[in-house]
Image (cartoon, rainbow, N blue to C red; front, side):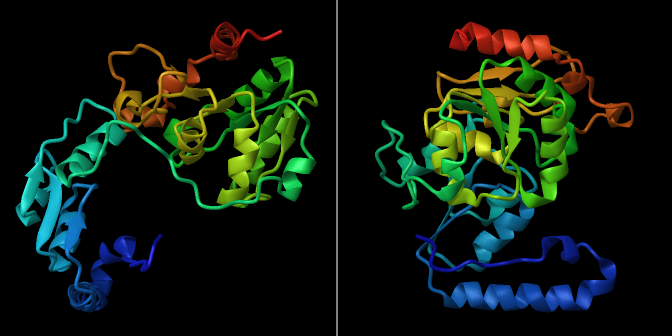
Length: 284
């Protein structure tokens, strides 16, 4: 459903020694976006950069959130109220509602995928899926604890991760006493759909595959630390967030405790996560 992908080098744009090239790239982007002839531009990020790009589109209708910071609302023709105290999905639906879409029922349309990929044939009939990696180190529960949790479950655990994160998956397996199987680097996004869909439940950090599991109605047990699960946790009533009640949380990984490790993650023990899974899933 994506016709064009516009790629920007936002990290390189911050480098002073590339200023001349950055200005040229930005002007080229503005020209190309404007010539594309878009009717509507929607900014869900609400950053100054995304606001500028929305303006570059030359779309007659430019939509964004009234509460967005960094001055991005300046670039919108229509400003929609979207509370920062609700889940991101509900927030984004406010824009869909403004555009006249029906939002009373949420449906996740998956792209066509192979129902029984080869990787699925190599997995046990009954298993849990674990996603021990995370986009930010601060959001990552220790791999050792994932492994200890896997060792206590009454079924095998399948560990998913990218090829670049295979070492994390291997560490989980090493501490699982033979109860975990790593398929790190062996699946693309489409392969993950049937692998997760057949899982009994899903254990993870605050990470992308968590939302995939939630969309598939697979019970999610998500370990949260500095992030805010109210806004970015697994969406749906069947899912469970494990998080310590600390006065400093959520801090979005901005606090100086990064020098000493994030206690909001490190102080979550295996017993706490296991007990929650046992309580909700009735492990036997």
